[in-house]
Image (cartoon, rainbow over all chains, first blue to last red; front, side, top):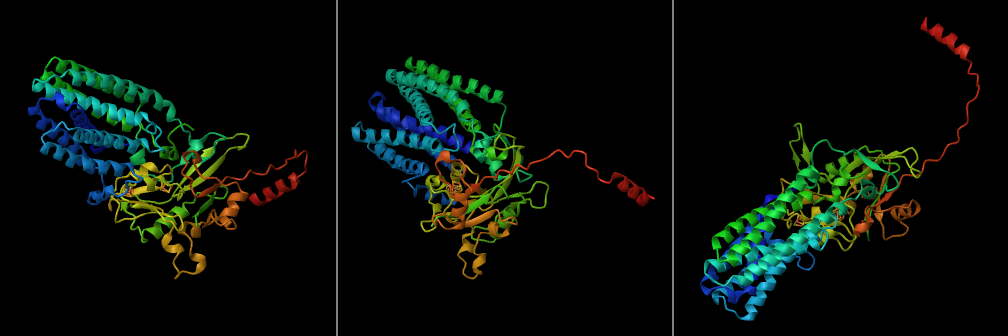
Length: 299
Length: 234
Ligand code: SF4
Ligand code: SF4
């Protein structure tokens, strides 16, 4: 699949914002009260920035408001509705000054995590893209979101001399599980993407190969679905992005554990970069079945 | 009703007639114009609803000698159309009455998600209009009472010089499409995805094995031929 920067930025930025909101809701009492407003505002800015960026992907943004119309079937619609719900919820919570009452916290925790889940399900639900069509997709999205949110939360806590123990521990656990989840994802997709040209055309008896695509230039389909890079290059991205994410979040957790907000902050940025690379790879590696009709893929 | 097409892979010659007729009709149809980018330059590009690809199948016990198969693909009007399920705006819809899958151009926001969900490459974004476009099964022809009844068929079907495309109702067991599918073991593409494509493909027939005999020593009047040839050359 062709990676599109607006979608990559959207999933990473909103993932951070929503993860931060979820951790904030879960660990409200751990955060010094003075840091509540900046943390909440940061969560909303990251989420909102991501959503704005996602609009950049639309060919007809004036109809974007209609995206909430099909909640019953469409994951994108569900995501849009939950995201729309997230902002008034947060605003209400801020108005009541970060009350530790369970109702607000539970509502925001669920809303934030469900929104991330819906984002992931947009991809996971697509059967023609076998790399994505697996529960690991949403597990990865949620774990990365919680890792980023946990680390950011720890940074805010550390900068206000709060007790960062829980947040740093949470970040460590999430970072390690996210790393394992992603390795499982990488192990899986190699085998999962092996659909043959013959199967796609129904000629499974013998090898089939494309003779003529029926067009001489690129088309919408080739631009959107055929994105081929040498396997070695893709592997390099894996080796750079995943260690960068996991190591920077682990380092960040240990910085914040020792009360260093600065160290944690630098690690947040490094992790953000790592996640942008990882999301790029998420798209670049995924192969859509349509490519088989263009002669790409095993015969 | 479950309207759709039967496509005969045995007789299709890959002439691109259906694709061209489709483009011609639909560019002034309900979802037209179908944008063309750089039409007079070296790398023209545009929206098509129907694309014909050709494949070479290697020799095997079931396909002795191998074969070339021309493969027209347009929207399959799937019974379980994921393009409709994923669409967040409700722009993509499947008509209750006849199963035709359409895009409401006024509602689409151009997110491409439906194209991602379609395994058959049946949807193409019109980058100029900013909306998704796809085969309408010529909904504006097949119900047009101003047309003579014989012409109330999709443009691709009408134009096909080898009659490789047949249009009809798969819910009617006596329709030609149902009969052909039954008799020639028609199949939908990628059944494992569970989209239940309505369009069916008829596999190429097995060529009849022709008995051949050794010619042996047959006289062909060689000397007469040589003599005539010599005469002509002079
Ligand atoms: S062929 Fe593609 S566009 Fe047509 S109904 Fe099926 S999934 Fe939708
Ligand atoms: S591109 Fe248009 S028709 Fe397709 S899913 Fe998006 S809004 Fe729906």
